Image (cartoon, rainbow, N blue to C red; front, top):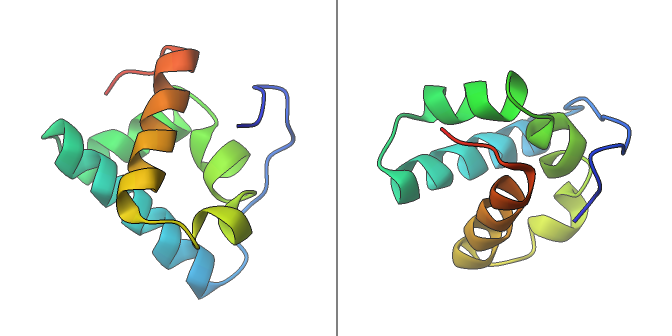
Amino acid sequence: MLPDTESEKKICNSKELEFAIFCMESIAVRLGVSAAQVYKAFVDKSNILNGYIVPEYEILHTQSREYIVDDIMELMQERGVTV
C-alpha cells in the first residue's frame, strides 16, 4: 500500500473508471452503505481514490474481489477513514 504522501493520479480511461466504481461499490456492499458514501470517504476524507486505487489499477485489477476489498479496507483502517 502507498503512504499518504504519494502523488495522486487522475482516472485516464474507461477501464480505470469502471474499476474505481467496482471498488467503491464492493466496499459499499461490504459495509452496508451507499456507494456515494464510500466515494465521499475516498475523495473528501482521504486520497484513497486518486492516491491508491487509480495509481495501483494495473496491479489491483488482476486480483479477486475479496482481495481488493480486504486490501482497501485495511488501508482505510490504517488511515482512519470511516464511511
